[in-house]
Image (cartoon, helix red, strand yellow):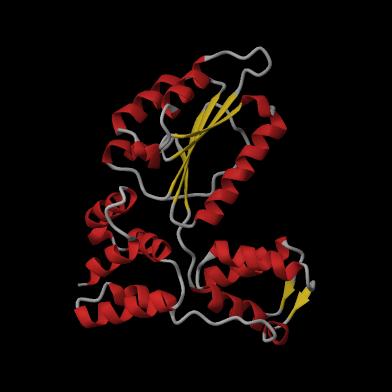
Length: 270
C-alpha cells in the first residue's frame, strides 16, 4: 500500500514517486529536494533525465565521484523507465549501499515486473492518482489555503466541477485568483468565464464502453471540451489497464512521429 513519503531522514534510500497526477507528484518531489538542501547543501544534488543521450553516464559519474564539499548525494531521476530495466537495476544496486546516497525516481507509470521492488520496502514509495469527487474538492480547499485564499463551500464545489481532477490547471487558476481577492464565494466566481467540465470522469468511462457508438460519442465530447488530446490519452492510459500494451504502442508511435494523439484516441474507440 502506498503511504506518504516523509522527509525525516534523506540518506541511504530509494524514493519512488509515481502516478498520473503530475502536479502533486512534482510538488512532493520539490519538498524532498528542498528538505535535503536545507539539511545538507545544494552541492550534493544532481538531476538526470534518462531519456536524454548520455544521461546514464552522467548519473553514474555523479554517483561515483567524491566531492570535497559534500559527502551526501541526492540524485533526482526522471524517465527512468526509458532505459532497460536491467540497466536501471544495476545502477540502483551499485550505488544504494552507500550510507550517504539517495535516489529519487519519479514516474507516471507503475514499474514493470523486473522493477517491482520499487513498490516494496525498504523503498519509500508513494502513488499520486488523479483525484476525484470529495478528494479533489478537498484538494481545491487546500490549494486555496496555500495561496492565501478562503473559499466558501459552494465556491470549492464549483471549482472542483470546473477543473474535474486537473490539478495543474486548478493550481494555475488559484494563483490568478489569489491576486484578486483573499475571500472568494460562488458569486465572485460567477463573474469569471468558467465552464463546468461535462461530467469528465463519466465520459472517460464512456470511452471504455463495450458499445462502439458510446465510445465514439464520449470521445467526441471530450475532444470538444477543449482538453488537449495528449492529456486525454495519458489519463486514459493510467485508467484503462486492459489497453496498457496497446496504448504503449500508440504512445511510442506518437513520440516517433508516426501518429498523432487524436488519431491514437480514434483508433482506440473504433
